Image 1 (cartoon, rainbow, N blue to C red):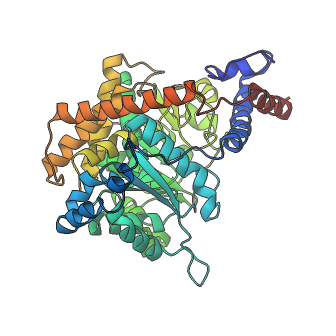
Image 2 (cartoon, rainbow, N blue to C red):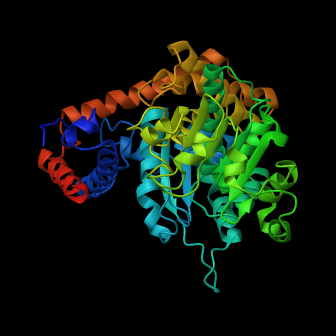
Length: 484
């Protein structure tokens, strides 16, 4: 095994040169999982709470707490909106989950989602300069079922302490009702990242992929494989952005969606899915291979692969086919296999392959923009605005088949996205305060840079300790042994 540094810039270098592409792809997944467990054990999680106000002498205790803080309490009592300025509420997000649909692992028990929710908080702070708290909720009722009403009530109860709520990893159909109810009944943004977040970044990637292959959104045939919260929202946003419902077909675990799906119509909890049954696939195509014959785009968010999407399906697609295989943690088909089958542009949800279409490019900037103008909600139009913000930013850098999206190390993209989303919120009348595009951009970028500077300092001074390279090597060895 080759020596490699802690930056892990190229995971392919971790494994023997004799490994095939398939072996390297499998080994990378195992390696990242093994490294994740030992790294989490090493740090005991990823998030800590620390003061951001100074302590310059004993009497500052009396300023930050009693008796001085009494003035803050009464000021907020007189004007609740003052809480956004006099506390951290204006930059604080609750990441709420019942952990019933965690990545590709399904129901992980309420506390099982903590690793993902802390990861969300980590990215929110580093990429967007936003503080966040992971809140995994036991939503089981007396009958042992996850009760959406309990989730709704929980979020309503915490609203006074937060500037926004990020819903995460809630299984369908509960996710639809929880989001739609809270969006209307709360006075702060309630955002479902698996739905709107994945929808906005997927739309961004699709916009640029179509620009590269010189095809129009309204003219392309699109097949969506999987019909959960992510793909149903992706479909809805694509249609709002100009996609043609008559040229769109979705598939769930029972087959294609169409107006003859009586099982979907009968279950009122799946109303979002039924809306798509009525709007798309007018010819009631049933077979996936038929649907993909001549299709321009395949967007898969179904179940972890790698053999979920078949190469022979892709071979039936139109020239310069676009394939998004975005299941986590393993894509439905590996990018090399999709390209060998004829795909021209391939994207996944992972950062160790080109074209990462992942909601990490969306929620930090979107929520930062919403928070800075104190928005009351994040609308679908704001999500679409964020998609075009991401797409246009990448265009300025120079898009090509292996670069359709900005990446997480492009710092200014999140400030740009925040500013564009904030302007849309103001335009729609859902913002409490009005700022200029430049003001939002400058404040967002300053917060992001401050976070980076602070983290660099903590790492340099060893307050954030560097893990032993032996941990990384041990994880690599496990991966090599597993696929050799």
